[in-house]
Image (cartoon, rainbow, N blue to C red; front, side, top):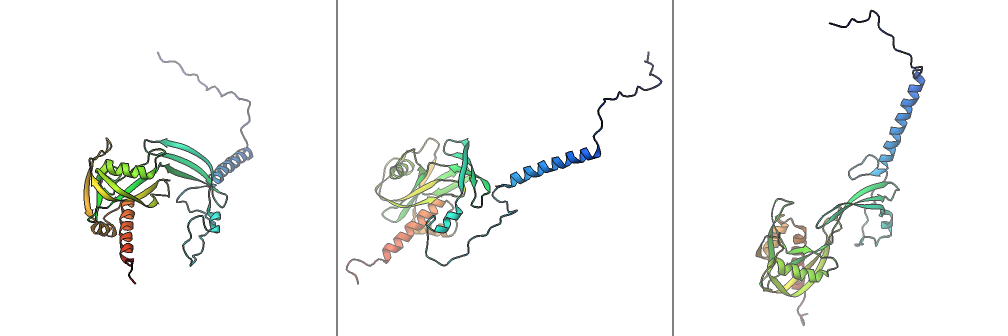
Length: 264
């Protein structure tokens, strides 16, 4: 049996509260817009890589001069960024990632993501007949096998020379009678603090290799001239190998240009 509906509807009871006026609603809307604008202005105080909305500055004009290294030019003081805070946002087995809040030279603030790495060594191992020792290794980051000079990560507090001797033996089985420092490179200073110390190894003898448990390596002995050609042709992409090969080649050319003892 259906319930009979009332003939008349019951009017809603008055809550006693007055409906906001048009002026009140307008004021509330304006306040919200001001709050959103304030948040937007606060966000704009941070500058992120790639944003070019408002820079308000230009680069220094080109100057003809001799080479002046970084921080040796008094003008470089105007380029410095002051670190306001730093937080480790990710910790890994080989490196960590930190997020830094920095104050720019014009007073604005920006965020910098930095890879913190303990550093590494690389070895240009040169045989007596002019061949370079190269390792072939699958690099997951690139998804292919690369051809590189032997290299490895520094242990905490380890001397780079000791690390170079250790890594050369572990990866290739080579021992060097002579190990000479060549240079240090910043592998990717836009976002990482890794420094790679490059050595030249000569007087090589072969023993037994002992790579890490997760390292699978093949070893080649390649003519230096052929390696340099591959670098100049763009077929070698690994940065430490490019630098090591070109330095080795340049040193060889400079030594060849020096006059022999007693020559006029």
